Length: 248
Image (tube, rainbow, N blue to C red; front, side, top):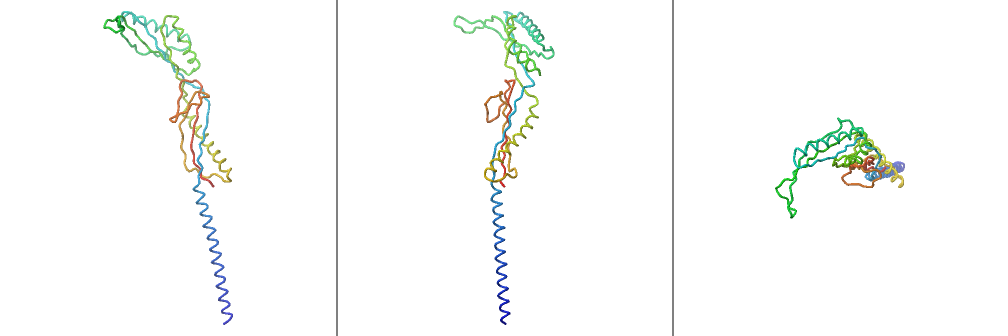
């Protein structure tokens, strides 16, 4: 009977030890799981960027010229003569005739002003206008033309030269490349932040592409809506992405 009591107490002691061990192990598992869940909710948000300098590969120049005379017929004859002078000048600068685009003619009536400077109904003449434009991949030639075309004034042509538009036709491919570079920059920034606190980054939780900034080279201009500079031959393209990483 005494041995039976001792065995019973021994079994109870063993059961208590097993239950205690199970409780400790369970607590450790729960604690580890909670720590993992808690840490998995921690994220780091970073902004990555990439910039690249480019040279425009397409340029469009536009200008206008006019002629004035007391009669519509004479004004048209003078405009036609100016048209020939403008065309000859552009051809002499290396632009083929099939690249020179002339617009339709616009007509403006000129009225006589009275002694008070008020316009009357009396017609004193007519002014005719015509626009001209050239599109070329030789962007430097277009740039030079825009600054020299007013030489036509010496030939009696009243011409107005507008600022050329400088474009980049491979922008779509460049955007894809730069988004990847900006995302890599974001990852490196996030890794540096995590390592500074003894951690590591995990999966991407969210990502958002920012606006593209196309500015004059070395410009510091930015816009919340993005920029698309067309007046500068050389440009800087900047891409931005915002990425959120989990912390491990």
